Image (cartoon, rainbow over all chains, first blue to last red; front, side, top):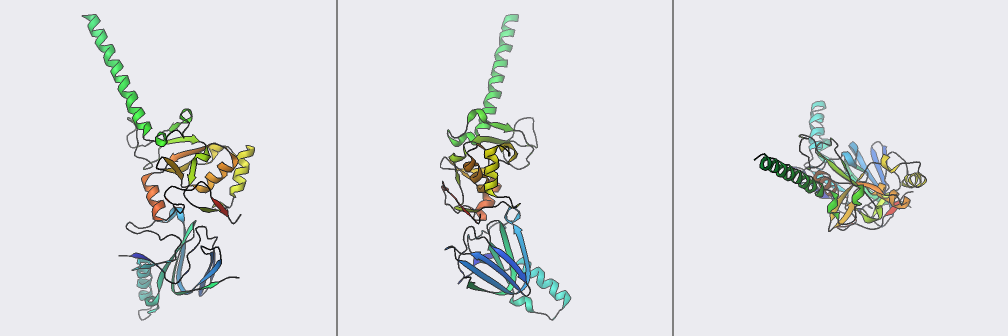
Amino acid sequence: MATITAMEGLPKLHVTPLASVICNAPKIIVEADDEKESRVRFTFEPYQAIRMVTADCFDVPDGMSIIPQTIMEIQNSIWIDELRNTLKMTDCEADFMDKAKHFLLPLQDDFLEIVAWDVRVESVG
Amino acid sequence: MRLIKLLTNLLLAVLLALSASATVSAKVASGPQNLGGQVHQDQIVVNALMHQGKTESSYGGMSGSSVVAKSVVDPKTIRFSQDSIKGTFRDGRSVQDLAAGLKSGSIKPGDVPAIRTVERNGQLISIDNRRLSAFREAGVPIRTRPATAQEILQAQKQGKFSAGASGSDTIRIRGQ
């Protein structure tokens, strides 16, 4: 069963993070305000999948809750399973999905989900 | 004998009328009137809309449909569920433009969807904070409706009550 956990070592997002999302393969770059209103850049690299859903259409499965202002990881992700199954059909020896993590970012009006190997964070001017 | 029968029928008719009236009052009272003095009773509009699943209230003879009780209230009596909002709506229009339009009369309050509210400790809290902010700025009465249990649950799961359990009387608009 999928669970949501907070990603450790990442700053908390502002309630109104005024985020921008740039897709620049193999990176997804998200710039947003942290809770102290400092601009922060999160780089997800390499990414395998991305989807952004407007908050009104985003369903949080029963038994799960968003951790406010927090970058989360979805453990035992169904989405990763689906991607892995498709990969196995495409290339039965490929294993790069084994390193993939399913990240979830609450951006107030939208929820951004990224499947990527890792994320790094830096301050922006 | 005929007189007794007539009187009995009259009594029955009165009892039936009283019973129907009490039923409607009880059902209307499950709407926003519980909100203690904040609702303008004379402005209460009970719209028999076919909002399936929007509310558990329903009136007799409307099987399968439901009723959303809408009220028009002073926006200053409603608190915000969040401590900050973005200055623009999803369609790109700004909160300021809506406020200005309401103030000038170029936008009719009735053309703006009613905001969804939650009652906590006798206080109304909005989960549609941008619209509330615009109406407050314009000083125009706002239409409200009680959020459904599903809508409240969804807002809670999405962490939308950032202003705490009692809500906030002020809100910051960011990125104008």
